Length: 401
Picture (cartoon, rainbow, N blue to C red):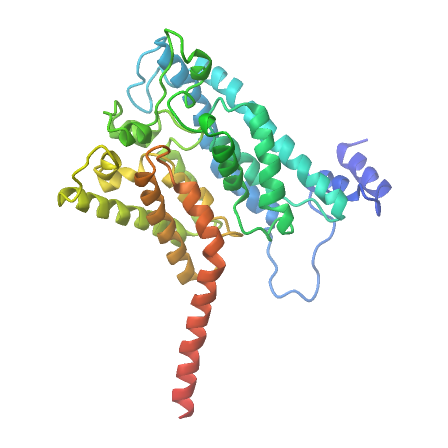
């Protein structure tokens, strides 16, 4: 008996019971549903939520694979066991040893994210009697990419439960949430376990265990170094290719751009939100550069490090680009109107750099800026729609006058 037949038999056996949603989800995971629309539809298309999620996951896979290589590379580099890779195609980067140590540390994060998150989804589907939604397929991949490589698995599991329940299920599930679930999980980790989400001992595998010992590893991120007015030992190409310490999937700007092109050309990610977010970040960076150049800052011990960073460099350090491509474009929590998308994205980029500069203890504000604008996205759309209504009413009055 084939797997499809077995799942179909289980589906029929538990049809009409509380366990039906769970078996329906298993049956449609690899196979198309038996029900299709026939009459009375305005638009017929081959795409569905599952296919959309799969394309986003496809755009994230290069960042995941690169993150595994980078985790191993940063580990061995900090130990002094290998030399600098000297570029994206450096021989000491793309090695089996790096991949093994990276997979050993990153794949458990993926397993916990999907296992716990989908477990909560299945539980709520059974309790509430609705079908299992595919919304967590992308969230489950995003979460391991936005955390430090050595985050304890129990912390990640706790945060996933919180993010899925509080960030999505209490609002009614996929399509009803007002906050991005992955960023809700990230925010929970940051505020509940701040020492595991910042500092110079969490971004390189093995650094936490060695902290306080003679051979302690320092894995400070570029943002952390700038925030403390320290010199940075990485050139611009290292920052662009991603051969630097950081969260698992955020470092390679090259691969994030590839993912952005996939999302834009498949019309899943909004190019307006991505472009406006980057414009907002560059604008805030230009303002800070102007303040420094004008000599308005006399106390250089505060904020000066990140204020003086050339405005364009903000796009290749930190996670602003990752947030703009994969987080801000979430179609559920973002603005829906075209004009609203420009406003929404611009404010995300603008606020991200502002928080980055004025919060030297944790110089990364992308997730806070996106969560804040998630809350205001409906308000932005409301005023955009009302503005259109008022303009049309004025035109109508002119025509009827």
